[in-house]
Each structure stands twice: as structure tokens, then as C-alpha cells.
Image (tube, rainbow, N blue to C red; front, side):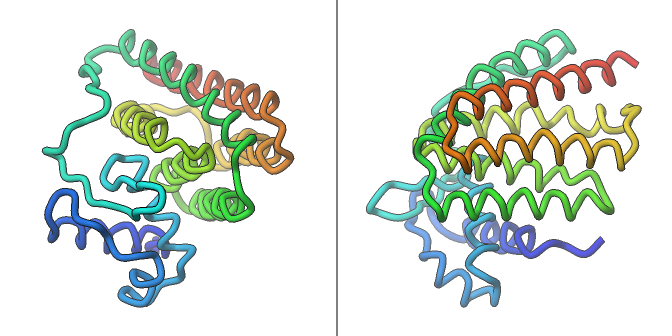
Length: 225
């Protein structure tokens, strides 16, 4: 499968970050786009994912800065060593991301919405030939950006990445076909995007809660097989 443009942008920016000091200010989106000969939309999606993973941090009015692994963490996550602990961390994510979705509906800009829709389109395209794990992370990262709270975005990104480490094992045991997975994500993510687009915070919260509960049930069911 060919690498998506946002995935290429992600890889290129990661390589760039590896070569700069912790806390270094990164070039603006337009410079990255010119540097890597990619669209600003691809750069924006990559930066959203990097922001959610805690690899970069944005400061309003100041720019975006590199964060190396040795930098102080906002949250420290305990290891997941059992299905029970995985279930507990899913509950933490449910509480956090449901509220992030509501804030996203309240605060998103038109540009934010375009980025969220683009992330969903990229995910749906990737699901035609694969499981779209990276694109799924990018979608949730784009939603967190819509909430305009870098602390929440940072915490949620670290938590999501922490939980997704179990994703490969769950995928190996999944009883869902690729077509079924694509249909479920189209419906569940589509409902979240629609609520954010309509600035309906209560519905966005409810749709995210429904999506995460369904996903939690699927993952834990697969883990028990």
C-alpha cells in the first residue's frame, strides 16, 4: 500500500524533529510544505498527530515546538499488563475524550472542521486496503485540536497512544471483516463529525461516548478470544 501524503509528512517532520534540540521552534506549515513538496493540509494533519502524541507542542501566538522523549510529561501512565488494566484505561479515555468532543463542537473554527473532515476522509480511504491505525490516531488528534486546549490535546494523545499499543493484538484476533470495520467507523466517526460541524456539543459528547463504548466492547471481546 502506498504511503499517504499525511503519513509522508508525519515521517518527514519526525525526522526533522530528531535533528533539532528539545524545545526548538519549528518552521511554520508553509515552510514545511515547501521543504517537503507537500500540501499544507498534509502538513497540518501530520502536525495534529504529532501534537496528540506529545512530540510537538503548540503555544498560541508563539508557534510549534519540538518535544523530545526526555522532556517533562504532563501525565505519567502506568503500564498496561492485563486486560483488566486495559479496560480501566479505556474508562479514563471515555471520560476525557467525550468532553473533548463537546469542547470541539463549541470551539472549532472552519479551518479546524476542514482538518477534521480531511482526517476522516484519509481514514476511510486507508480502510479500503488496510486497518488504518495511523489514520485513526490522526482523526482523534484532529478532533482534539478542535477543542483548542493544548493540555487536553497532550494528555489525550499520550493516553490514546498508550492504549493503541494493544491494538495489534486485538486486530489479530478480531472477528470483524474489513468491510464491517469500515462501515462501523463511517457511521460512528461520521456522527461525531456531523455533531461538531453543527456545533452540537451535547450530541458530540454522546456520539463520542457511544463510539468509545462500542470500540471498548469490540476490543475487549477480541482480547478474550
